[in-house]
Length: 352
Image (cartoon, rainbow, N blue to C red; front, side, top):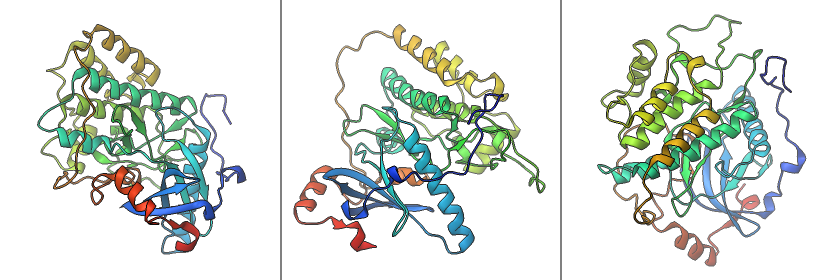
């Protein structure tokens, strides 16, 4: 429900029965990752390849209640918003455990894609093309009054042909509101907007207000990474990076970029959130820049890579990135088909 101020009033999420699917129709394959809140498996639903995110229950009744609220919120938002650059929601189960089922994206996470290319970098047209995918996904979310709050390369997955980026993991997403306190220091420090950082604990009852422009800042850091293929704030820990951005107004350098791209970056990471552009403006600026580029002389084939022996810098992956973690699987598509022929997938209801 929208208030007179253009913000969206948050109601306690309730699961619509039409979003629930029969767990007997779910078949679980190999685990492809695990995080603080969930395990993610490759699976099948009605002969469709899917990602099955199984939520942890928690060790206490209080923790269980929090995870149930997070689960209901994620399902509600996923079901409500559809876009070609957002992961497709398939359905959910409440029993015997909380489960979110989405399309399976086999192209890997954007982070792994970039790390595998180092020390090389993306062609400018490809980098900006990926940025457009991300900006359009965020434009869609913001048009529905939803803040993602954890935009980073781990939460961006590639399609099987590695030509399209899709945004995933709405576990931290919230509807924008003036009346509800949203948690400070939400997301991952290296990509976190300065206004989310706090050096003091909020007093009881005190509210921390911020708006959708936190996602614009995070986008700027992702865009810088796409253009340079280096870890932003190199040489700093996650906490050091957040502190430098929030309290020293330090940003990565945009000096070596074309002026159009430098302008987009510096506009998006401005200290004052209200001075940052919105994603509709960002999409238009990126499209204008693409129009100035010379047509590509040849089509670059999609990269096929293995994650064997890949060493990633220590970060804090969200459960969404687990959908792309294929370290133990090699050729995932062939392996999944082969294993399925051998009866490798098990009925979900039998597993739980």
